[in-house]
Image 1 (cartoon, rainbow, N blue to C red):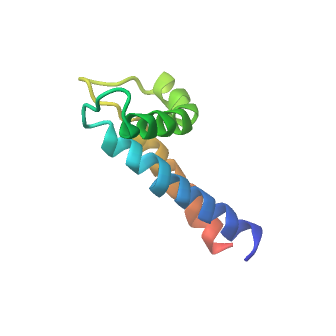
Image 2 (cartoon, helix red, strand yellow):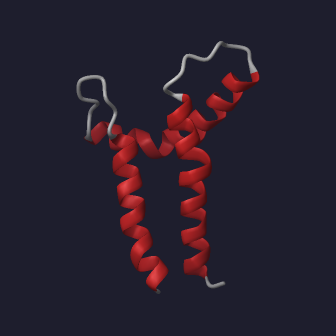
Image 3 (tube, rainbow, N blue to C red):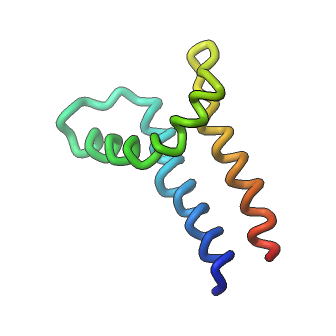
Amino acid sequence: MNIFHLLAWLIEAYIWLIMFPYAILSWFRIRPDTTLSRIQYFLYQATEPVLRPVRKIIRPMAGLDFSFLVVILVAQIVLIPVLRA
């Protein structure tokens, strides 16, 4: 496995194991002081450094936050040439 495939694997793992679970958990109201709330907080801490700069550029519109979609789209655009290398 070369460095490009490792980079692509890390990006995919971040998207599927961190970002998607955070997005799904954000749809639900979770009671504080539960295991699920601690998991949600961990995922928030892991995604916020990536999503915050995008939110500064693209503000939420009508209560919808599109920063997640933008990050996923950019990650996929980066992955295509990386996987061809």
